[in-house]
Length: 175
Ligand SMILES: [Zn+2]
Image 1 (tube, rainbow, N blue to C red):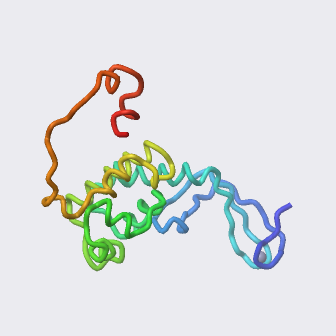
Image 2: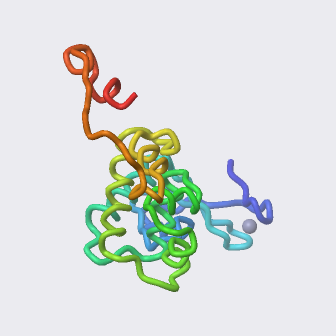
């Protein structure tokens, strides 16, 4: 039997009550979640199954269905769901960390191109793997220098047959 984590009192099961998932930092309501309420102090608890998957679905919903520009709490949620630090997110988007932090703390609204880029990075990296620190998309953007105008690079691309004829093109093409 479950007991209350606050007062060790007995808890009762509450079914069929929508759960307001405020811990996410967002306005999310979940249906079909079993909740518990302490009969002595009134504290409520919920058991959320597969939280990682839940967060992925919430993140995708933000990216796909949110027509307005991303709000600070949504930007924070997406970044945390990618397991990235704010300074790395700034690097990936190619902006100064102070600019990025203003989008997260609400002192400035994110601009349309960066809103699009952030969604795109989120969708690409969560499709690749759950820990985005190792995702190809993330590493690609993170390692781009901020002084690329000064980089001299030959435009010629040299390829050997095995680079497109054999095996997994996405895996070999980037290495
Ligand atoms: Zn209690």
